Amino acid sequence: MSDPTPVIDDLREESAELDRLVAELTPEQWALATPAPRWTVAHQIAHLAWTDHSSLLAVTDQDAFSREVEKALTQPGDFVDNGAEEGAAKPPAQLLADWRAGREALAAALGAAPERARFPWYGPPMSVASMATARLMETWAHGLDIADALGVTRTPTDRLRHIVRLGVRTRDFAFGVHGLPVPFEEFRVELTAPSGGLWTYGPEDADDRVTGPALDFCLLVTQRAHRADLALEATGPDADRWLDVAQAFAGPPGPGRTPKGGTP
Image (cartoon, rainbow, N blue to C red; front, side, top):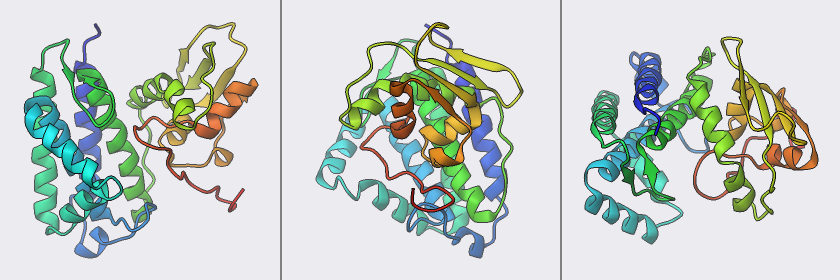
């Protein structure tokens, strides 16, 4: 089994970069609207803090996490939004402190967990590496929403490799959650890393292929941009269909983003 330390370290770095973006915000900036409907900058950080707390329970107190799952089942449409609302109502300094403490506690717990540990989740159980990867993905994606609200452009890093890998691994899930037949054959995926290298997955002779920038692939699978606005190319009908439905996050299909030119 691969060492989960690199992704835990990258999760810490991704969180620290976002922390630097929000640490000195004014109360008015915390209240800015983000691309997520009804969510401000405060809601975005509150959601990260809430999910870190849930993840920490899954790693350290599975009975308490089971109770959280039971609560989620009683309010399936509002559970996540309610958690964000509760956190966003706190003073920014308290929200920031809670997020910092919670994410560090989670990173420490993941680092101390047994190598082959599996943790319960709202979807399938997760390994140490998959839990850390999911948290990195969310931190990056919600950080983009915050950057959009602040009018800031964030420089992509090779930490995106974890999100790329997750996006590739969730191909079959994306087809299934949309009620589509899962392709039998693997795809070839070739993506250019922010540092200029090439990240490849799948057999070289695959009929269906996806190529383009790794950043654009991550924007697609986290539904932070519409396919029409990205420089991704698909060869083969199944690969083409994948780019329409790809998502690396658990749960039902999201509404996605509309193209910059408006409704397709």
